Image (cartoon, rainbow, N blue to C red; front, side):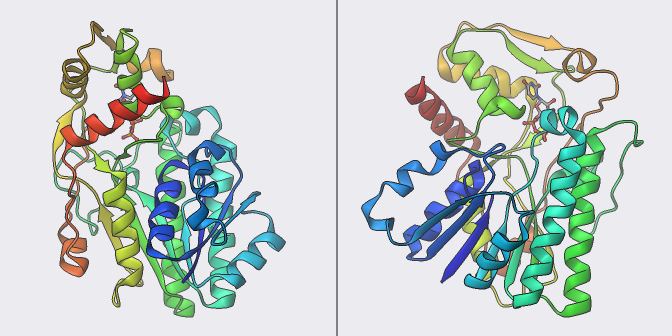
Length: 325
Ligand code: UDP
């Protein structure tokens, strides 16, 4: 199988590329290295087993000619290229909205032209500020006002979902939508705000751990290798097209508790500090207080179950950040 991965030099994209190469696929990556990095894929490019099966293009997905060629060449398209991370969205709102909306439209337009099966990586952010759990794919969505820019990320990804579903309804394009719940693992950087690599790095340096708000907000973390297996599983499935699937973990944890666990597991002398949201992100910020997926739908279709629990995820991340230090 020839597989195009947009954002293939990113954190999740690089793990997906690795899985596809291990499966024996031919892998085409396009990445503009905005948040992705050659460091994420160098080990794949230098691996003799993959030398003739891995092709990397450094360019934007908005480049029509390049995307035309790549989409025409491949059988499946995994569209992961996007502006990600709350901090990045707040710092570069216009670029983020543009790449998320125009980029996805471009990918869908070309997949439709060549009738290629495509998976769109959406996000649990799309649900907005619910307090109930678990979140089911058919739940309503609740956002704050447009003055609070955090929601621009959710709204842009929701627009991607609508566009994808419209292609499915109008042109019968085989498109699958996945809502990813806080994917974590080796190679994820804390530079764009992601909490686990940030806390682990702080803990390993014995620096203060920066818990935003009062730390009672919760998340459900998912190991990246579980996520990429699920993405491939959905592409292989017969009845996934035109559907939205949560891809997530099981253990809900409060961020303050996460900080305590990371301090304990690293043997750090770090002090846990509470930082008001306003100080971390400015006054127009609001957080999602709870985020737990229902994974019943994806379990029913492809038997998905997260195999890696939070302690094992933390062990893996701690080890990989230790090795890099
Ligand atoms: N968070 C935190 N300290 C940090 C980074 C993040 O307390 O240094 C919190 C953040 O406010 C959120 C949770 O950790 O409640 C997860 O944040 P992340 O940016 O990883 O993902 P998302 O907000 O998209 O779930």
